[in-house]
Length: 265
Length: 321
Image (cartoon, rainbow over all chains, first blue to last red; front, side):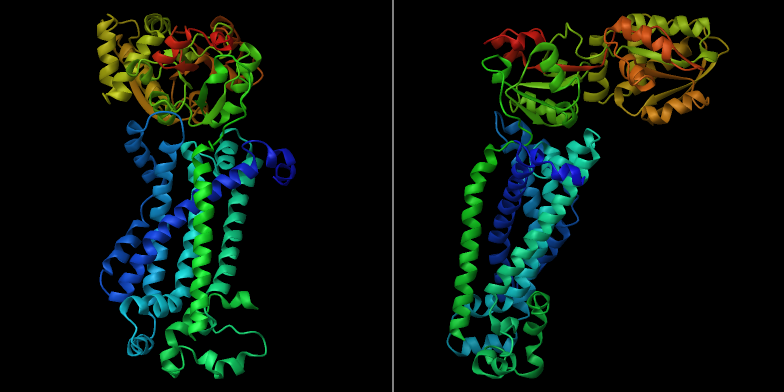
C-alpha cells in the first residue's frame, strides 16, 4: 500500500489520486454548501421561534436511511429521464444522498445552539431595542456558532466518508480506488483509497476547526491570548454576553465552548 | 462587544462566501469530470469517438481494454467505470451515457432493448459454452444422453429469451424450464435415467438457477429422482460440494471453469476450451457434452450506433470513421 501511494504515477495520472481527490472534494463541498444553505436558516428559525422542532426529529430519522439503497433507488428513478453524455444522471442521486446525510447534524447543531442561548442574553438584546431578525443575526447566531460548527464538522466528516459511494455509480472520487482495487483484486490500491478518504476527512475537520477558531467570538468561546485570560474575562470584553446573567446562566455558551478548546492548547 | 460580534459575522460571511465561490467553480468542473475516464487516443477511428462502459476490472483485465487494443487495435475515446454487465451499464447504454458496453451475451436487455452484440472473430473473449459438470458416478448413459439432448437444443438466443422470462418478467425458473422443454419436445416421459438419484446445484445467479431447473426437469422426465440445491454461491463453494458428494451436478461455463482448474490455460475457441477442460477436470468430476449457448463478455452497442457506423464486429471499431 505504501508502495502504491509512493508511486508518483498513481498521483498525477489522469484519473489518479489528485484528480480523484479534487472530484471527491467537489462532491463533498457541493453537498455541504447546499445542506448549509437549507439547514442553517431553517435551524435558526426553529431555534428562534421554538416552533417546528419536529423537523429536527424528522431530519434525524432520515439518518437511518441506508445510503447505498437510496442511491440506487434514486438512480433507477432518475435514469429513464436523463439522456445523453455527461455525469448528471450519476451526480444528481449522489448529491441528493449526501445532502440528506449532511442536513441532520447541521440542523440539530443550529437548533440546539440557538435554543441554548441564555434567555437573559436574548432578553437583553430585546431590551436594547433589537428586532427579531437582529436578535437572530447579532445575538443568537454568534452565540450558537460553536454548536453550528460542531454540527457542520460532523456533517463534513460524514459526507467526505460517504462520498466514497459516488464511485459505485461510476463517478470519480477517492472511492474509485476502493471499488476498482476490490474489483481487480489490487488490495494495495483499495486500502490506499480507504486511507486517503480517512486522511481527507481528518484534514477537512482540521480546516473547519481553524475556521471555527477565527469566526467564533472570543466572548463566546472564552479563548483569549495567553496571559490575558483572567484580565480579559474580568474586563468589559470578556463580560460581553456572559456578564449579565452571571454564574449559572453562563451554562449553555460555556459548555458550547468545550469542543474547540483542545485546539487552543 | 458589538465589534467582536460584527467581526465574527464578517468572518463567518467571508468563509461562507469563499466556500460558495470555490464550490461554484468546482461544481462546473464536477459535471465534466468523469470518474474513470482515461485519456483519449486512437486517432480518428470509430472507437475513438465512442465511450465504452463496463466493470471496474475491465480497465485492467487482459481481455478488457488492453485486450481490445492488442487483438483488434481498438482504443475507445474514453472508458466509463460502471458495473459488471449490470443495470448501470445497461441503463447507461440505453440512455446514451455510453456508446458501447461490456455486457454478457445472454443479458435479457440485448433482446429487450434491441442491442447489437458485436462479433468477436478473433476470440478475444474465451468461449463460455454452457455444459453440465457432473460427478462421474452419476453420469450414466441415460443421464448423459438426456443432458446431451438439452445441450444440443439450447443456443445463445434461446437462453437469452429464457432469461428475459426469468429476469425481466420475474417468472418462476422451474415453470420457464418446464415450458421450454415442452415447447421443444424434450418433455417426453421416458425411462432413460430410471433409478438414478441426482442432487442438482446452481450458482447464485438467475441464469444458472434456470439452467439447473432445465437439467432437473429433463432428468425427472426420464425417471431420475432429482433434488435441487439452488443458489449455492460461487465456484469456491460448490466445486468442493461436488467433490464430496453434497451435490452431483451443476450447470457450468466452459471458459471460466477451465480458468478455475487451470489458471494458466490459454485456449479461447469453443473446441479448444472444451478439449482442454476435459483434460484438467479432476476426478471424480467430469464435463458432459457442451451446448452452443454461450454466456460470455461481449462489446454491445445500440442499434442506432451499429447502423450509424456500420458495425457488426469488434474489428469494425478500428476502422476510420
